[in-house]
Length: 156
Image (cartoon, rainbow, N blue to C red; front, side):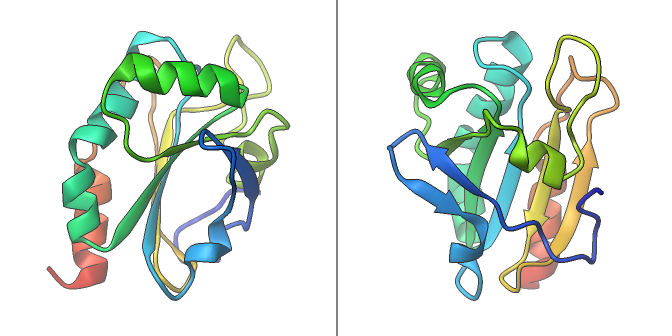
């Protein structure tokens, strides 16, 4: 089952690159959340996706949003990848057990990648307000859709 617009977001708990456990519901009533899925650390398009979110972090913060990147890589790999990408000042979450990719409906059953490249915006009430899955996993269209969804939520 996919996390679709208008539905409550799946409440997943995942290990973060800083060693903490992050649960999506911890932001409920406090912040909007941008959840993006990237297929594999240390690949070119994933680097663009993580670095692109880092470059726009102040725009996300101005729209009262927390940014979380998720892949099925283990946390040590994600930590090294975050350093490789430069100024990544948001958490990457390890979904090595595939709970989040399944809950959000972006798991891939076949091929060399565990999940689709996708972005979601979850509002302060925990409802999915934006969902986009890249048609081609080797491409990434940027953060514009996520930012537009946040502007609509925040009335800006």
